[in-house]
Image (cartoon, rainbow, N blue to C red):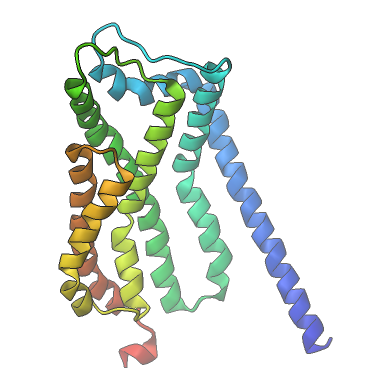
Length: 251
């Protein structure tokens, strides 16, 4: 077999492996989604997601659905999104299993902790947004609204807001991973990042002002964790770099 034919065969085998890993990741998401459909069910899941808003509304108030099939589609949509979030460890594992055979031992020590920490940090960001931020943001908005206005949010608009906020906080909590990767790849040093700390703080508040509602509560709730997680990344990066050095680098 010629080198060209061997290269083509290797490339095809990698494509087949990638396809299999993607299929397994989708199957994992489908299993989680099916389980959530059975219990607690899409309607109950949406009730849980809507609880922070309902708690901030006047007693007896409810949300509204302006679309004809919105009461069916919106709970199904939120169930699918929740399934993807819950299946993230399995999805990241499939990514890890695909790239692991081509890595050296010291590189495996780099990737596996990043895969685990990325999924845990993303879920932590979503949980922080739901349990800590939503209640304060919705209460602030409800208290600020004039008494002449009846606040009755639409379920589709509410879900879009919740998803965008959860994604923003989930991505924000990945800051330590980004810092570690930048330092480990030699793109920037820890000392340089410390010099850039004032710009990072300003950038955190700018990003928070862009991706969150125009209220100071949600902006601070996003910017401050971003800053704290950046500092955490600065502390972890040197330890992580030493632990994942190649033998020749350590020498």
